[in-house]
Structure formats: C-alpha cells, structure tokens
Length: 323
Image 1 (cartoon, one colour):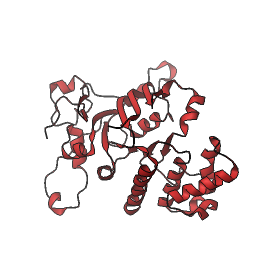
Image 2 (cartoon, one colour; image 1 turned 30 degrees about the vertical axis):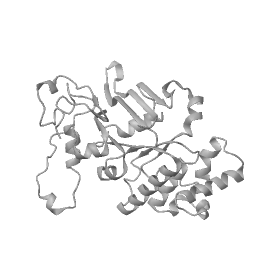
Image 3 (cartoon, one colour; image 1 turned 180 degrees about the vertical axis):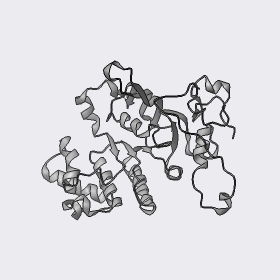
Image 4 (cartoon, one colour; image 1 turned 120 degrees about the horizontal axis):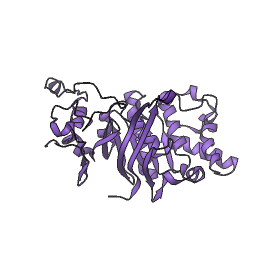
C-alpha cells in the first residue's frame, strides 16, 4: 500500500446546544471517534445517509472546523497542534471542492479574480505570472483562457464546477476533499466531471477524500470506501469488497437501496431498512444501529462494538455478515 497522506485518530466533533439560564443543554455528536488512513494517490469515498456527519468530518480533516478531540496527521505533521500561521503554510496542500457550484463562486468577481485569489494569498509571483497561471488552470479543466474575464453567472453548472476544481488546484495541492462535488449536476455532466477528476489525479498525483451519498458513483470512482452512520465509521474496505460482500448490516441496506436499471432485478425482493434514524442528540445504548437492525441481539443493545480489522477490511459489528 502507498504511503499514508493523511490520517485521523479518534476524531470527534461535538456541538453543545441550549443550556441557557443554567440548563445542562444537549450534545450533538456529529463525529464521534473516527479513525482512518488515506493513502497516497487513492480515492477514499465516504458514504452514508444525510446527517451522518460526512461533511463535518471532511471539514475537520482540513481544519476548516476545529475538532472537539482526536488527532489529524498530514505527512507526519500533527495538524491539531498548529496555530493559524502554521496551518496557513499548509493550506495550499490541503484543498476542497464544494458541493454547490452556484454558491461556492463569488458572483461579483471575474473568473480571473477567483482563481488569482488563492495564488496571491500564498505569494505565487508577479501579476503576469498569476495571470498566466490562471489561464493554464482554466485549460487544465477543459475551459478556454478567454473565459478569464467572464463572471460565474455566464457559465453552466458543470462549467462552474470545473472552475471550482481549478481554484482548488491553483497552488498544487496533493490532498483534495470533494464534498458532494457532482451531486448538483446532471448525470451526463457528472460523468464528465468525474472523468476530469480522474485524469487530474493521474496527471497531478492527487489524493481524494470523496464525500457522497451516491453509491453508483462510488462504485465507478473510488478505490476504498468508508461507511458512516451517526458519526462513526461502521465499515471500511476496498470498493470491490464493500459492494460484493458487505459485512455490516447498514452497508448491506445502503447497497440494496441503489436503484437498478435491470427490470429482471427490480422484481426480486430486496431488503428494506425500516425504522427512524436515532437522534444524534439522544444516541441509543450499545450499537447505535441496533434500533433498525433486523439481526440485533441482546449484546447489541448494551455494548457498542469495537472496530475489528482483518486485512484491508474494518467492521464495527458484533455479528458481521457472512459473504
């Protein structure tokens, strides 16, 4: 396996709500003890239902939000101990492509200004060098340099996302968080942007942390997959392992819910996940999935399972599924 680019150990992010006038308030455990390693030049996909903490984890890994506890290590350097100046020096190596291509670009700025902003922030060079770099970035993502004088509203959603990717790559990062970066695009445009991301990964030796709820995209694009449920990773494995033989019941239900185009498969009975998702402000005792799991037994209601690793596979379940 390639060298580890970034890792997290027992990472947590808790939000405290209420508590006014001396009240105790409530704690939302958005990320609750996550540990993972992301290796050089791989695409690690993070999947799970809305509200499970995927985006929060991605932002914490870049320290766009401060963790409540745990460690983040980037190429041997502990990020949680760095001050603002120390993080600023690393920002150009740790970048993000946001979900909404309409909201992530300043509508009052020309494309050249948008791309030049991170270059100037890190002292890239002279005005002429910055302008040439901006033009090269546009061409890198399949857009013409004549667009430098245009405004974001003059582009389609797919083109805007290409500009967002160009901005993220301005200072030659090696780790990029793609936070639902194709979910707002039409299917045909999704494929184009995913192909672009793959080509850029090969060309620039990038490592992706790919956050999404779309498992059909993950199956085609990711090398490894992490499955998140209510702030915790319940299963990690290669894409082939996860889709061919899921070990955690939650993973099985997620995969079974993926729409299928084959009419013969549609008629077959598929497992359906029932029940409501527990509130992150009131976690159940034991395994937090046991209230929805048809295979739960007594121990699941009292003891939270520890992640068990075997080879490339990690699963947090008292009774992992057989192949």
